[in-house]
Amino acid sequence: MGNKRVTAVVNDKEFEELSYWADKLGMSNNEYVRHALKVAIKRENKDYDLPDLEVARLNQLVDAMNVLSFNVANLEHIVTSGFQSLLSLTRGENYLLDDEYEIK
Image (cartoon, rainbow, N blue to C red; front, side):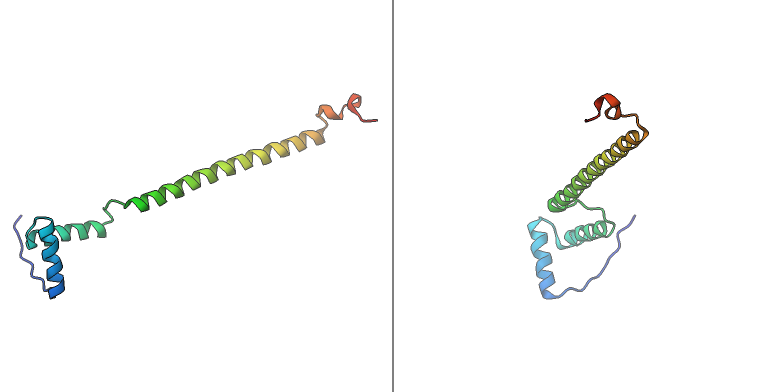
């Protein structure tokens, strides 16, 4: 696996930024360009760490979906048991319909 040479043309401002960040990270300009290329390829492949704010928002949305799912399950239970009560009432299987409990 040999090395290949790539030539790039940058303007003065881009070269100053390249030199600044390379010096800040303790790299040569060449090493920094290779590092920047790896980072850019990872970003294109969606292989990167999510920033804290994105993770927090994603967790918030997941929690909201869990609460919504729980509420829908409770509503389903209430509606189902309500209709079961109404059906049993119309069948006459309710103790409240007995003659001894009639209001006179």
